[in-house]
Length: 370
Image (cartoon, rainbow, N blue to C red):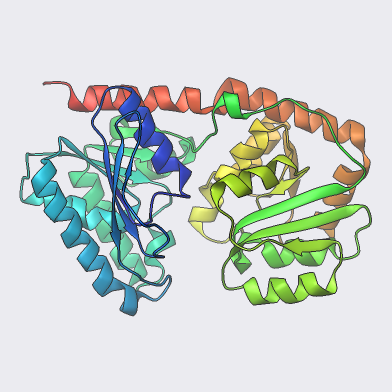
């Protein structure tokens, strides 16, 4: 597996790697620690090995990052020569060039798997000629990838419309396991709203903060980093019902999530990627019997409306967001009904146990002798 982060906080690649290791595969993650947050490689009891390139680099500055990204590709190719892998599993579009190169030079004739966490535009928007570059990557993936892992059925529909062979598409959602879930009702007196992740305008951070100002009986907790971090700190300093925890390690974040009553997933429905995404926090909330707050016109909204596991709001209407939070905070019967529906839908349709069987079966078909 090729991964452009240190394989510490990104749960999807780790869950997939452990799934394959537990199915008897020899799995190595080649990871780029661009934040220099690790000190060593990792070896797990199931045999999973993580090798890390510790090379500092920023985010969102392509002209500074690209030279180091090229070094990461060369580092990956050097390891692939040594490992002579049967399959190269590329997590997201920024690792695909190394996979394409390995396939082109026929290193052990590997099978190429493209794990499409997001549409390529989510990464390539930082580069010039975004539309052309995205078209080239999609066309190359359509021709060269032996399997493509996608995050929901809407990706299958969209890629099918672009000419992708649907038999190569495997839906694996970034879901928690049933063992990590819980069935519960609400709660203490204070209604706890939690936002975690990238502190960006398009993630609805400003919308959420503004909507909750002065909303009695509620507390807003924010954790993460991003371009709005300074603004968030200033707002928290002025609002005693808000707090900012900074960037948390996963074990610390999990404790905070356990105490939440609402986990909004307010991606601005502006780009195609935001429209069809299924953020992991939506599935995490469902597993913990926590209703979600999602924007209308998105695939998230379709899930929420189908299973009755949250509230759909107008992203452009701050008052609508405020009313939804207020009702969830004050109407216990309404809240408990959504919480119960969230958990039931998760166990039946979205748990990691459902997803890992799909991934393991896909690899069985991919690597079976023809």
